[in-house]
Length: 271
Image (cartoon, rainbow, N blue to C red; front, top):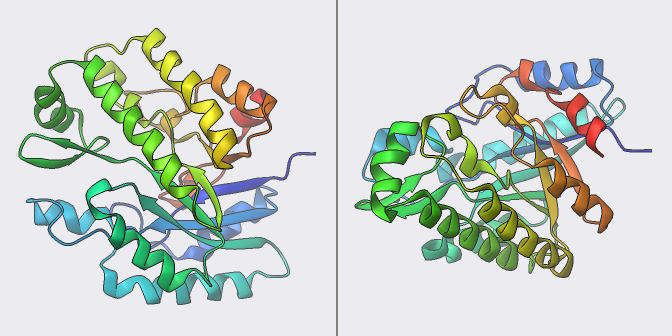
């Protein structure tokens, strides 16, 4: 029997999400019959990562708030202990030029960390690092213009995903690679992506997941995105990961209370 577990959720410490109290998210999860719920807030980012300071402030909590987040998360865990298994985690970003920054966070907080979502949100681009899931316009001007073609962007993205899996494998904490097909968020607003290229890259990732003992964040948030309209995990890829015994954990990637549980029916249908 599949554990009803929402393994990727956010909190009031997400500055591009909702400021609603965590109880609203968790109460909804309980009402929907979830048995486990992972708090996986975006980890702080290195200062100076972007030239746009306003964008930087929206993407993740400042490092000074990390102790407050853990205090808050552990409070929720205790408060709901008799009703729901809440696990405390973080969504960390693969930033190859700043791995020591990530290592310090993990080392400082490993005693409190039960789950890690390791995600690729950023790629090098025009005059610096850029967010691949910010806007289609930004993707086009700052990333596509830099690489010259979607084929090149896709290869760079999956190169990062493979490196992220290899790096996070070393951590003695339960870990999953986040929204592995996030590169398709703006699919209807950008030049088309070659499905054969994506399949080839993903087929090459499966043995890496097996070897690294890294799980898969079966992230359904793309269903809520008009320019995507599908989960950030392809059906055939999920089926093959399940067949190979890779840990596949549903994730609503909720940034608002009403997002909790969205896409669960799709997940159940395809496992």
